[in-house]
Image 1 (tube, rainbow, N blue to C red):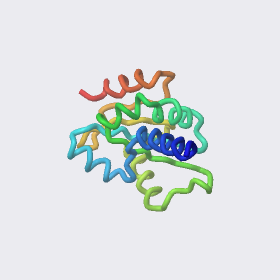
Image 2 (cartoon, one colour):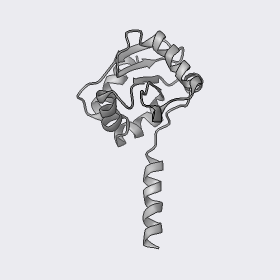
Image 3 (tube, rainbow, N blue to C red):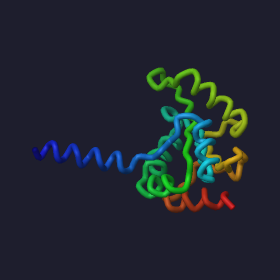
Length: 144
């Protein structure tokens, strides 16, 4: 019984702190337009880019960012993994490539673009040695 209680508590914690990363950019754009929230578009190499991996752990998965982003942002991650085990479906891979051509033509990783509901760039940033709260403030500085 103790084991079951522990598992349920763990599940609630994990599910309660989960972010809503959209599965397609079109869905992110639609939600942004419907809710008038900015899109945080993250270009990452989830299995090869050390700063991307650090941002995932220290910023995107932090309680502060998860809590804030669920109310204030629409999130989409354009991932570019290199390992076969992390291979993306062709449709997503092509979508991310098109997004990179539009919003990350120089191929910087990580790159974080904040977009309005018309998919216009409000600001760009990348890896910074900031706390989650400081990073939230940085992202918010692009939204006027």
